[in-house]
Length: 298
Image 1 (cartoon, rainbow, N blue to C red):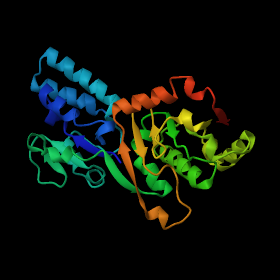
Image 2: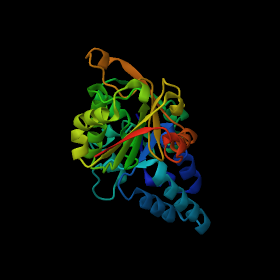
Image 3: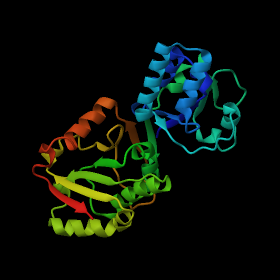
Image 4: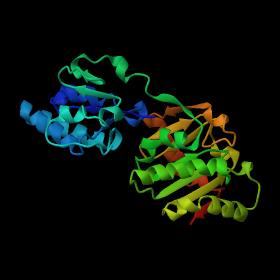
């Protein structure tokens, strides 16, 4: 879902260029910056110091980089050896994992773009994609939202204790595990009207189908709300954290029919305001759970 760019530290060695570049990125824009290498923010500051920026400009740069670490920088674990940033970015296995590489000077290399000459089109139309409806593809679309926090929320009125739903959740947790990301809790908000059985029977089915998830140490909270309490467009399903979110058009379901798994569904990045609204609606007020039936596993 999110496109990942790398930026050469020397390409943004002053406040003007750094501000211009960083404001193109964010979870809500579908564009993120790789921490390439891991101490990338420090390398940017060092490049600015070599440029001779003043104390006031340096302070603004440090603060902008600090803010960026929360909403637009991601770790990919890409190999990096020595001090030659350009040579490392050109390595096989590195460039292929990046959508683009922004650099100070022109380089005759695929996906490399000189920041001073880059066209705005490179940053546009990154907020929405279409993905196949199999569990792995749906989980992969949510990769960077899942990795943005140790607590994730799903809102899907049609999520049930059935394999076609639980397989998608399992794929999401597996993705986090493969990335060595510790997922502590997943909260699911769904509609009571989709399953009218007793709560203990529903809980037993969830416990059985999500056993592999629970054995990975993830706590699952399922809240069954009235249709009115969900207060959402029932065609919209969301996965979000405190800082990022996505809207899935067809929900968190892998169809039993293999042919339907090849069909495409729309996935759209949520803007920051909408993410804040969802967090407020589902996590920060007691009203949303006032009349809910809740299951906590384990």
